[in-house]
Image (cartoon, rainbow, N blue to C red; front, side, top):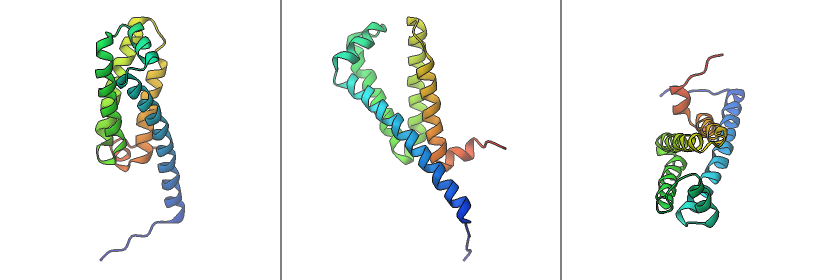
Length: 134
């Protein structure tokens, strides 16, 4: 049997890092759920905004369902990486639509960074895939 000792400073830093990641992820999830559910339930503001950007009204609900599924996958720890990948694809499409419509695209780009930043800070698997060196 082997014992591993963790110093309190390292443990505290990891806990704070994970907490920051959970907070960032929670804020992202709240916005994504708001957007997805507005599209799924065909809320008037979501419908008007989507149609104004060029989406056919009969496709808005399908887009909302895709976002809802992606967000649920992002919430579940075992599938969070897949969820982040799918959300990144969704946001890439949002950026393309914004460029075509002549709208600012920075929100979708920054939001994509925040989705991955939250996951990076809360998930050791992602940190091991993308090691930042000092």
